[in-house]
Length: 178
Image (cartoon, rainbow, N blue to C red; front, side, top):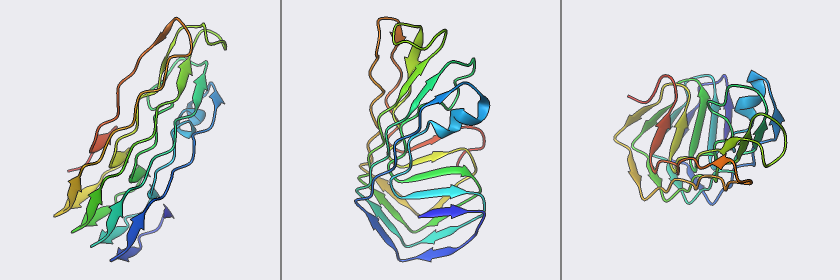
């Protein structure tokens, strides 16, 4: 489900066995940084305040993070997609839902100082198993069970630094879940 600047009510819905898209490869610039994140396995929210009630989000997998080459700021870059939900902006609400056995995507590659795999850099972190949020998320009476964070991307060269494995539950940047 992709929601853009809308606030639908989604009730008693089952989202299972979906796969997020792979993040794109980008060079430099602020805008391209967010596009390198792998896609969510089940739900993507960009604006609005959708409400999910009594939904089951089960067995989905986030997409692999893309690659980010060059530039100086790497926050948010090349992260593996979340297994269940990605909130780019907006304020979704999850009530009485079950978010179970979703798997975050593998992180991508980040390089700086050049374009070859031998330049200095790092690899993107694995995506969270349940929710990756850059907005506010309200989770009420919702169970998150057996979600697995994605693996960090594999270093491509001798100067590549490892990153972290994704969280099993929720990972936030900026305003987080409460």
